[in-house]
Image 1: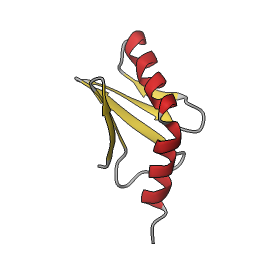
Image 2: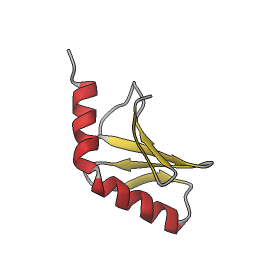
Image 3: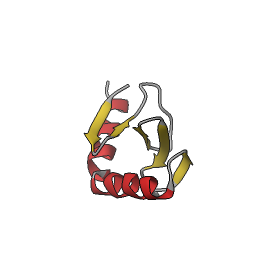
Image 4: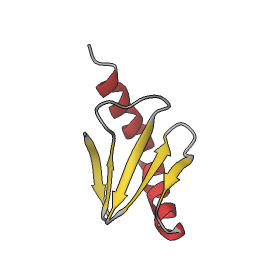
Length: 77
């Protein structure tokens, strides 16, 4: 489970056996979300509205790094 970023209590990661479309998982406390990186669409979330907005802001700020990490991890060898 590669962790890409820990910021403001949020953990951004993907699993080693992920699938398309490219997405990121976010956890904070007992809450979680799955966000598609291409569209920034929230696929699933247990966050309160304020918390998912912040998670989306952080994801947007780091979107290019997350996409690069995805491509490097899943397109190796």
